[in-house]
Amino acid sequence: MKLNRDNYELYFINYFEGLLKPEEVDELMLFLKHNADLEDEFYSFKNLSVSEKEGVFFENKNILKKSTADKISITDKNIDEFLIASIENDLPAKDIERLDLFLDANPKYKKDLETFKKTISIPDTTIKFDAKKSLKKKAVAREYSIKYFYYSVAAAAACILLLFNIFFSDISPVNNRKGLRYAQKDLFLEASMTHSLLSDSENNNTFNNNTTENNNTNNANQNLVKDAVKYQPLEKMTNKSSDLLLASNISPVVNADKRDEYSRIYEYVKTSEYKMEASDYSDVVPDRPRDSFIKYAANKIFSNKSKDAANNDKSKVGLWDIVDLGTYGINSLAKNNLIEVNRTKENNVVKTDFALGGNVVYSRTSSDK
Amino acid sequence: MTAAEYNICVDKYADNVYRFILKNIKDEDKAKDIVQDSFEKMWVKVDEISAEKSRSYLFTTAYHTMIDLIRKEKKNADFEEVEPYTQGYKNEYMGLKEILDEALSRLPQIQKEVILLRDYEGYSYEEIGEITNLNESQVKVYIYRARVFLKDYIGSLDKVL
Image (cartoon, rainbow over all chains, first blue to last red; front, side, top):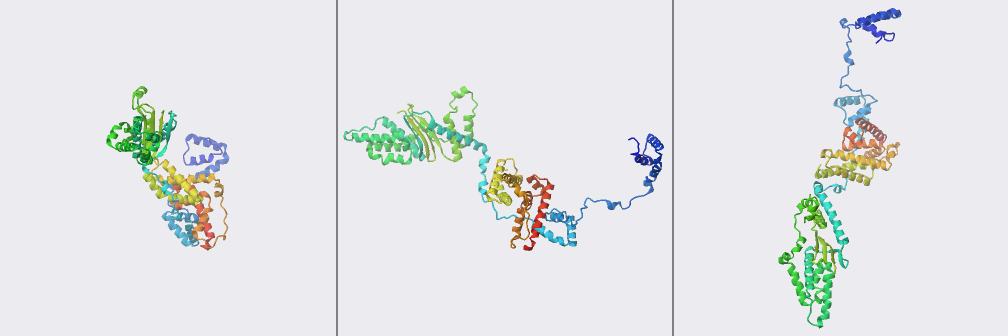
């Protein structure tokens, strides 16, 4: 810093306190020689320098110190802050004492304190959210979300493919029946089996009659039975129509032998012998454990096989594999017992696809005949 | 947080969130929608939220949903305008609760929110700041202003208390 008339005071002080370097002292002397008017002022600084050795101290400096606990004084102007802090439980213990003292000295503010206390809102606990139940979630759905996802995807795939297959696939237009019916599973299956056997009986021409007198009637009866069996197969799948077929309305137009035959067939299909024989229906009553669903799905869909290997592999994914997979998804989700069946008779003439879930049947039967 | 813990939250906090929102917007259907929405949002993030933070998450979500709703309905400006009250126009038989409700309804929206979070739920200044996106000092200032306003309002009707 260069000595000049703007900063000479600092040099004067430092000179008398012995803080200047020799060259700065020389500079100062030269400055005073050129600025003689400052000489008196220079010597006046001599008396400003006070050494500790002189024993001069400010005795009461402690009163100037602030303790960390020291607070702002409570006054008329800031009393609201203290009152609010008080009702907010935001006042340290020391300040509570100070506030109490202030209020004792200024009782007019006690009323303000009481009014501030009244500003605290109290919730009305009679007000309830009455739809809590709708907010709650089922733990299982969330905790098994991956499984849930697989089921959902499979169920959606099944629904789409079932509908697609039943309603839009390439089938013979000659005789095509499809629809949604009410059914009971056991009766449905039995009636379906019966239908199959009756069809075979019909093909074997077991409806022949001996008397001419009865021929026309029998032909009419045969036609009725044919209609019942051949053209209304879905009707047979219902509880009501299977009963009708076996015992009631149809029986008057069927001779006693045939009626007995139907009854015999009906009894037969309920036996274990028939079930063994009807092994080609084994997929009708699947008994796969449902908890193997994910493994099953993974094997079906994510099988890491080459295209050629997959084509030669019977386990490759096909339409009905996916539908089958989907039905397991639906079953697992809906706790249902959905069954799907696709069946083609040996001559590839009659095709039957149906899906049974609970008491509902989706079915399509087609024939070139 | 598990589904079971989530369901416990429903039992513990649905009423509180509902009261807080209802007190602010005074529309039962909308308040219910906000509660529903808040819980659904929490359910979506149920795996990320700890049970300890669930209450704070719910109030924060409900608060912001409510603010969005208010803005959407362009009510914000109305809420911000404090209607000057006049002395002596109230029914002289009005109780403290009704007077306080009336006073609360005249507070600027943000002041009403911080006061209700403080009084209804006992949230700290810091927690209120987290919910409302204010700093602690701002929360204190709003609470101070609200208390003074409420005190003056109640005081002005003191004769009927």
